[in-house]
Structure formats: C-alpha cells, structure tokens
Length: 277
Image 1: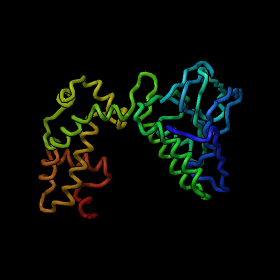
Image 2: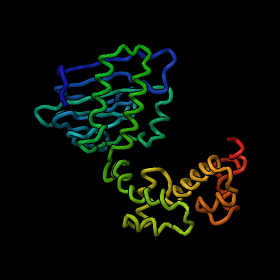
Image 3: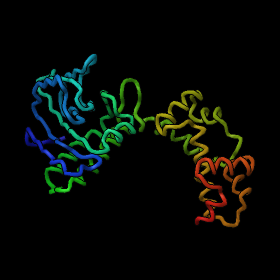
C-alpha cells in the first residue's frame, strides 16, 4: 500500500439534520505519535495499522496492533496507544450519526474489540479508499462518505476476526459445499441436520455454530427459508402447480405444514402470495 504524503487529515462538517451515518474525521499518520485519552473520544473511533506495530491499551485490556489489525472503539471509552516499533503508520476514521449506534449494534460491533483480517481481505485497503475518495471529491452533501462508512462496517463484520472467532467470510467458505448441496436437494424432505453436517464432515453442533455466525440462524432454519424462497419462485413462475404440488416440490411433507410455515414466515398464505403477483 503506497500512501503519500506522510500525514493526511480531513474533517467533515456535521449537517443540521445529521445523516444516519457520517464521517467526522479521517486521516493517515505516517509517524503515529503517542496518544492518551483518559476520557476517550466523543465519536466512534476506528484505527488500523498500515505498517509497523503499536500497543493499544483499554481499561483492563491491551493488544499489539500489527499489520492487518485494527480496533473499533465506542464513544468516550478511555484509551491510549503508542508505537512499539520504530515506525508505526496508521489510518483512522471517527464517525457518528443519528442511527450510528443502532447500526453498530445490529452488526454486533458495539463492544470495543480488536480485529484482524487476512492480508488479501478487501477490508485492509478500504479505509485508504475512503481517504482517497474524500481527498479527491467535493462531497459537500456527505452522502458518498456516508455510503462508504456503511460499506466499511459491513466489510468489518464480514472479514474481521476477533479472539478465536473466525471471520464470516471464512465460515461461509467452509459452508460452501453444503450450501450447494442444499440448493440441489431442497426438494428432499428426508434431509436432516446429521446428513447436512456430514457433507462438510463436522458435528451438528459445529454446523449450527457456523450458520449462526454466518447467517444468524441455525442450519435447519436456513434450509426452511431456502425452501420457502424456492416455493415463492414456483408460486409466481409455475401457475399450473397446485399448492399441494408446490409444497412437495419445495421439500415439505404435506400441504398443511407448508401453508402454516409459509404463513408464519411471509405473513400470508401461499395462495394469497400468488394472488399478489
């Protein structure tokens, strides 16, 4: 990653009616100085290492931030950091917004945490992309920066790894053979959790852990949603099929179970859904 000059910093002026998510400041520091903030910072604060390493200290926790690592801090959390190598280059983003806390919490990023990612992850270069974009554009409305910030948080959720927990992208890659299997065999009502786990040679418990990490639901719940999605495609694309025939093709043992499940998930019956289209 090539960055020049040695220091860059941009401040964004908050609007009278703040966006749901906006960047307050963003910058690059080619020679990161020691920072001590006993009262924290008033905005959410992301800092990542570009080159070298530094030590980051929080109340009751500390970590070395080397390359492919960063930390996301909530507002007003006391912290300090300083380089542990001769050169420590960093990029930071501070941000807020009327819906910022809700977005952060919905992504499960609300707690201060140290993140790592693979060296080839798009997360590593994205903050630099945002910095370059802000430096070259006249985004007076702040809309582009707001979209960039949201995209950054999605990448952090997808590619960031904390503690012993792998990233969502790793989990999805591990599940890929099973997801393909589900697409090809959703119409078979006899497929259960044990068989699904055997496809990728892990335990049923581990399988559910991977699905909850990737999609927020269990493997069987994912399979049911897949069947409902396929049923919706049939209901609107195959008008010649009866509800009973649709249920069978979508992997449900009987029409009554299909109708009840469809109504619970979609809020309408399969027939009512078909009539909408």
